Length: 249
Image (cartoon, rainbow, N blue to C red):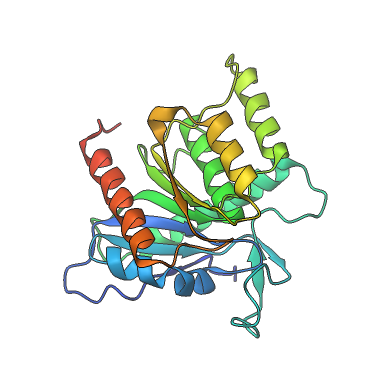
């Protein structure tokens, strides 16, 4: 029996379940259940608006940065791409298959039959996986994902190989460069070791009209300060409201 690739937020105990859902992509060497703990404050602040669908990456791996010692003994840990020498294409195919399996599972078991996936939140390597999924969806390569969507990317680990892959795909379709035309909140920590990579994603693959960037006093982790969390929540709600007004396909 295949491993279930999702766990949903159980904080939503109100009688009326949210009609909007967000896919949540954990960082490398983590898992959906751990990311749910790390996202607890955001889930609490947005729990009346969204259901949170916490995914597991497709590959088992060693625990990642910041996972130990708090989450020791919670094996297996997962990642999205790994470092086993597979091509970017193979890695993206594997991620796409894993996310589709989780979306299909959620669709078949969702507690509110009216609920729809409207966006995603990704952290570190999970933000990379989500950004690649947004591109796939934009190009019609993931028709099972709804469109339009919005996203929030925190501390995105965006390697040069991902940029090369995106641009190669864009050029194969007659474009000079790959732009992810999805309204996205980019959360940058000013002490994050991935900051340069996260900025590169915005600079190279987003046009200003689709990118909102907020800078936080943080390292490689989600914001923890009350004022920064309030800013993140404000922008997520704003993007969700914008989406509700956008023409539907």
